[in-house]
Image (cartoon, rainbow, N blue to C red; front, side):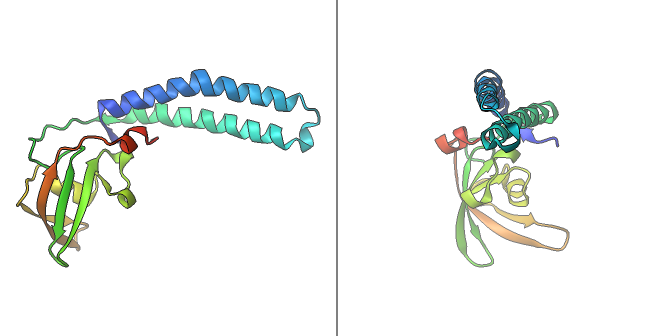
Length: 167
């Protein structure tokens, strides 16, 4: 796995694990007990639904624990005006002269449909440590590349949507 995460990402995951173990696990066990008490388990949909929810919670806990255990911690050491982690970058695609805006985030927060690109993506890697006015080549693979010009770099930090997004 070896996802790149910030210390804040790991702290958020640990909080989610704690909540799932202390609050959610207890609630789901209670739902299983209540459904089991209703009698015949062979035709008890509520029992199966409660068991499924309990198992999904346990699976989520194991996923988060494994992700933390195998993660590499990264920090942003870029200057205020350089493209880096949790900064918003506006670029112009030189091939078709269109502008795009992206936020550079850690691997688990990446969501290209919402304009969040990972520091491990080809575009994210190419933009890192560059400033407004720089032209960079994005190497998609050994045969395909394209050029972009950085128009603006903003230090926006994490938005509320980024903060509450579950991993």
